[in-house]
Length: 168
Image 1: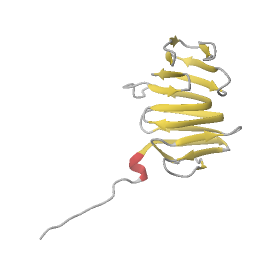
Image 2: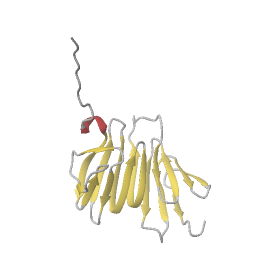
Image 3: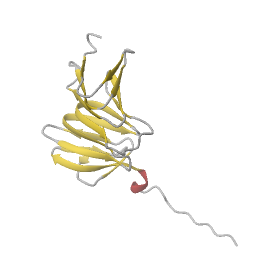
């Protein structure tokens, strides 16, 4: 006599890496890996590799599960969640790690020309497209920015880096 028990443990909750905390204004969208783009709504669970998008005047706020890491995106923004990294394609984003947040690894935001790393800080990025500069603002704390060209920058509270890869 043999007994075999099987169950599917890959429910959407088990793969949740973040949650939409608030949709401040529409249009805002989310697209799970392999899924169709749908309107973003407060409370939606987000899997790794989910693509998020807003079109002016859309804005939304997202929180990583259990890590005290959050970001707000807006304007004509597009990004993809990739583990502890945000692949930022365009638009505006402000990201932060709240006090007491996990500091094991920095939150990384990869743009088309540089990667910014934050640890217990707040960072604002404005990228309006391929023909323009990217603005990095250390809202508070220290932010490291590593350009694709190999240049490295360290910003302190209140410092701004306007990076133009056309000139670099």
